[in-house]
Length: 391
Image (cartoon, rainbow, N blue to C red; front, side, top):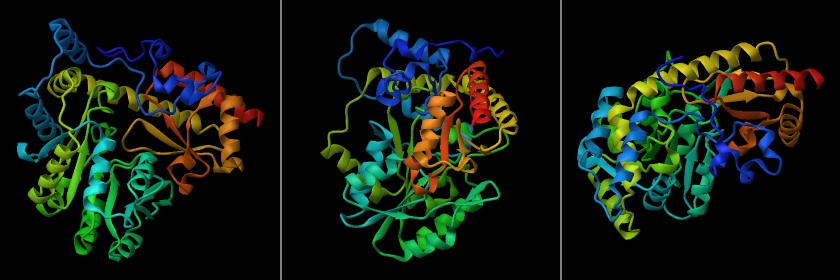
């Protein structure tokens, strides 16, 4: 056991956790292995809890400015952790990542134009695009020998179309778990620069590169890539504080940044949450030891998952390079999409995220969140093994 107890049982039902709520699990969901919603079952880092307690003890929660130490803490984190130096002027606040995606879509494309996505990909991308009156231009990933790759030839063809003005990049990729290499990102950047396609990079899982793999921030490729991109960051996934934090946008281009600032002003996206500020600053300043320990624990969970699935016919693991999400291939079972979900729920007592939610390219797949107690994961794998044997 590490200095941080990731094996501590925590009842997520004691609060209205979305992961275990009937909104997600339906009636009778309390008996299921809840492994769909992408948050961790771990208590947050002690420095975050301490910072929240100090803020609570102050007892006054009136309007506040952004703490002077918050943005420098993020700058230090990006530089120390990823070798990415970001100027303070390039950093903007956002209430959440989806808000930043929606603003970028509204600002930098026109109604009737389309946004390029690389499915199977984070399902909220589709909602943001369609709810802003834009179309979806699909550049599906290619699954080759158990590993996903970008289809650069297909991307080039889409980028040539003047109606496709934006690309939503998921880096690292949710749900397939790729930590895109610098070479892959350089190739994508070159295509987008040649054809005037702006890259909007969702990099919320960047801190969660698994051992042996590296996260490369898109905007850290160089000045041209930085000026042709909007990067969205948040400590929500990294430190398991999704319900008490905000997001950040990194916008190097002065022209794009001024437009973003004007839109933030128009939408009055300018209020600060005292607890979000306290949690985020503490995370960036003092949360690194906890994160390193969490990544080690997640790596152990992945080892268990990999080893156990080797003995289960009909399901295979797409090896993740980042995130705490595993993309599982159930196609060999020969079941329809709804049958996969029903089988796992009724026979294995598993509640995962349907692969079809990420696009038709996800048919036959399911997304598993393995950021849970190892004992719970082991028990769940026993249940899956038994269900597959009966099938």
